[in-house]
Image 1 (cartoon, rainbow, N blue to C red):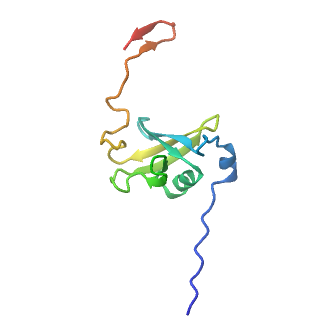
Image 2 (cartoon, helix red, strand yellow; image 1 turned 60 degrees about the vertical axis):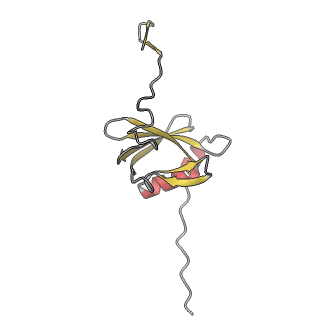
Length: 134
């Protein structure tokens, strides 16, 4: 009987990245997803260290589902894949900016972004300090 080779070890999240992250009480960091060429904000997801490691090393975005308590890779069931172009950590370490090439809808409702048609009425400010209702 021949012995099977051990699987290759999975690299951990780089220490300098892991040390810089400020996670919430559930160990998660907010990940803002943006279309790389238009700067369109597509969605917000949540990542723990493993989801971020997978995102940084596979070319596809992986999130951690708070409701299902499991990892999910965007597009595996819908075909609406997010191809990673870059990942940045904000100055406080508590949010990520994931720039992607989005294929199809980013939102589970079928809209291009999770913000389409969901604008709120606000008073918009300007540099003069005056505001106008929108």
